[in-house]
Image 1 (cartoon, rainbow, N blue to C red):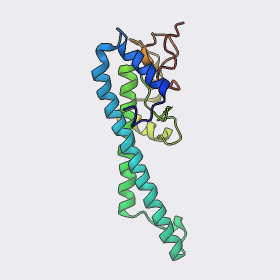
Image 2 (cartoon, rainbow, N blue to C red):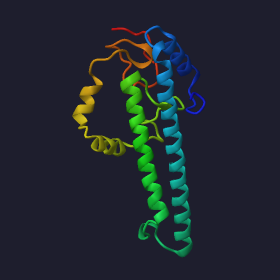
Image 3 (cartoon, helix red, strand yellow):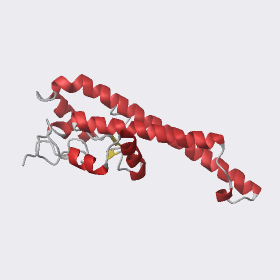
Image 4 (cartoon, rainbow, N blue to C red):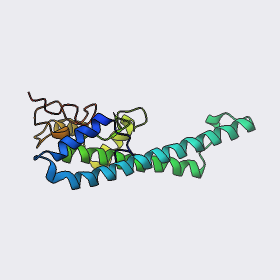
Length: 177
């Protein structure tokens, strides 16, 4: 998981500390499964986005060769399928991230940056789309993020700053208020 998501060394250390603590050690196997699923979801999304970008570049080059403006062309069935694949992959990533946050108070990252907030991650419209599919209103999401917690990102206690949206997993380890 660390290699696939390109975890920085400090994030790896934070995770080791968290999941070897008495409070979290019993969750290690389940958390590892959730992280493996999440890593697969991110890698799949990265792959389908790259496929879509390749298709778009090919279509633009073909339109330019024919002297057409790219806005004048309809999407091919292959491009439409690629857009749908990106939406499905985004749905899986958003749900995986929310599961990690809800169950383990971890933040899904790629290259040490929260994936959903990073430059390559899904945009706010995509996460709003998932909210709509799941029947969650934006107000419900804000309220649930502040609710009762068993712990927080990589071992922090309830009431600390380590919550969904932290800049890196475990960045607030041991900081109590």
